[in-house]
Image 1: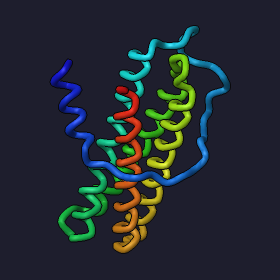
Image 2 (image 1 turned 120 degrees about the horizontal axis):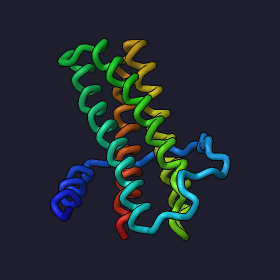
Image 3 (image 1 turned 180 degrees about the horizontal axis):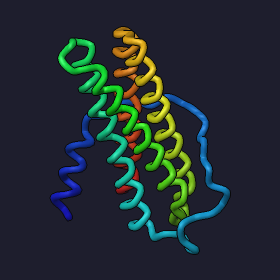
Length: 160
């Protein structure tokens, strides 16, 4: 367990600052459990989803740089990012239905906001790839770095 936490912490050390945006929460006050999770349960479950999104962002930042340098097929990256958009959407839904531990509601909303920012960045990145706009791709890599850093901050905060 300790090795996993250390590995995730090291992996998450490459991060960014996110954009602002409104949360597109589908939650209508219904959670997946009748009672709030404990702080530890909530942290483990949210950090699992945050780590997934961070890994996807990191992958696309690297692939994007290689696409711009013509070292990675753009069509493959378009397919990859389409799948990632679906996965981030599912991660957002997973967080949205978790009944937060007491005093974690603000963190929940902030996690959802930052994940929505990452989703928006990936959608814009896909459009830039489809338009084969190298300057826009490069700019969105920087935005995704910001999203990564913002999510890393939440990941680290949740363990405190």
